[in-house]
Length: 397
Image (cartoon, rainbow, N blue to C red; front, side, top):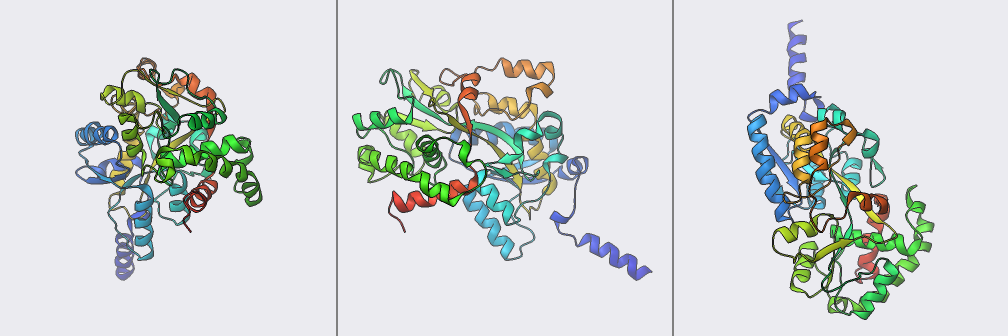
């Protein structure tokens, strides 16, 4: 009998972190005095400052959690996790990660995430409409991601230079040809560059509805002909005649600041307002969306399968989804990222605070963005588009 009890205790102690389910109350107790490694895209100084400042200070003050922000592209840390999984590494370095789209799909299919977890967090269960975050680029979330924010694609221009910007992809093509060298887009798979070509794909192939039921090879091959023709047609008129593309959105932003290109873009509806506040853009800069639609997405956080601090990651993910953090993040000077919260679920004080937010002079009103919003394409199409762009447009095999 003693042997059986000892064996039972040993087996419990030997369980790996991902095998030990935690509720939020237990996580809250275990998280105190710990450190959380938050892996996230680090390409925005504004976002980095918000995480290092408001988020880190709040976690320390409220929960005695030390936050370590680790800048890394999502595809890189997903590959890191995959390598650790294949090597049987039970304890890694990643606790929480900022993730969505094809990176989430790849991580979920490879069993790289701890969960389900979102349905255990009070900020999610109390303030977020579960149906609105049930899918990520068409892939079921199943509580393996925690909602973090919403973004929508916009184009950026200086009204002092372009009084009437093109409002469709057909008129954009005309504008590009009439203004050679004044437009380009980041090279996919850069997130913004990839989003731009997805917008073009929708516009040149008959809209988004036909792609919402999963990947269809025959449909893709047939419809994409018009899409590739569009991109090839504008290529000679792009910045540097498309001999080079900006490597990322930061490089494109710099070209716009210098006036080398006069139309910019962002998958962050408040980006232009942020830049005006920072003094990088003149106050005549504005944003617009195409009449045919503007893609939007929800982005999330997720916990690594071999996180050394699941409790701390849970508390951090819950805090990031809380009304206080969401309000701070929605404030343009901090980030301007739209909230994932359901306003109907908030108390009157919180509703009033969100309603009174000044979203910035260059940020389109929420009703305009909602009116033109179209859902993201399923992840399988996204992956195919990025791979084919490299082969067909850039000439890489």
